[in-house]
Image (cartoon, rainbow, N blue to C red; front, side):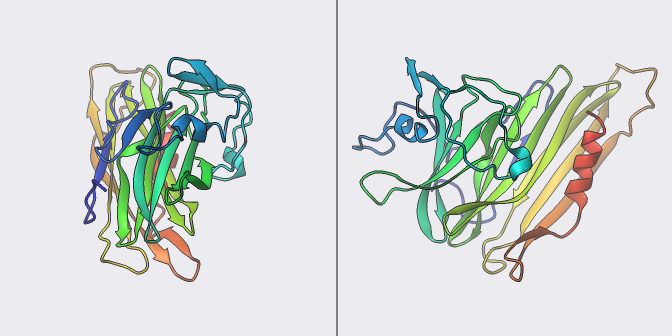
Length: 286
């Protein structure tokens, strides 16, 4: 694994017209026709056809319409039943630790060649110990049009476990949005720790940027370390003004929350509602 097993920090800067930051070195992007492991006959296309059975195409772009639904990690309220076509040309994948086991994560963003307002993005977990990859779990993690691994895709929270960091995003002429998600794997099954939607905007006298950072020390906390999340919100003045709106509050503020494992309830909980309040504040600007 290429990322540090110590205190890992990741950041995403929202700028006008930007949809995501670059992939980190520990994430590989591969054409769907590439084999999963050297010497294998199984391609990523074969894995993708478990979810869209009629995927077909020419060159490296494949589309289909027969979708095998999986649960949405955010719950039934986020299930997208309106998408009728699915397509992709590459996949992102990374090896991770889950309960001390080596696992392959593959992200199939089926909106690459078949766009939708809320795309279908399947995160799949595989065991590579057998001759062919064994699918252990899969969930739709698409909260927006396009979905990616975050810059630092994995954050080590114990010597045996990584959590997964992802984002879903879209943008328009003066605003862009990204839903940041933190995902845990336990017993070879995905569990959503939390998601927060951040906002970037440039209009009506304001240039707003929001930067999110994650940090954890895997030696702290049992069985999982606390996850520290910090959002830095920077609002700067620009010449454009809107006469019918009051001047925006300018400056820099930090919004923080720490997610701590609750053994009694068997899950992570934030130590405050700060991220929820930030999301509500952002929604008021849409």
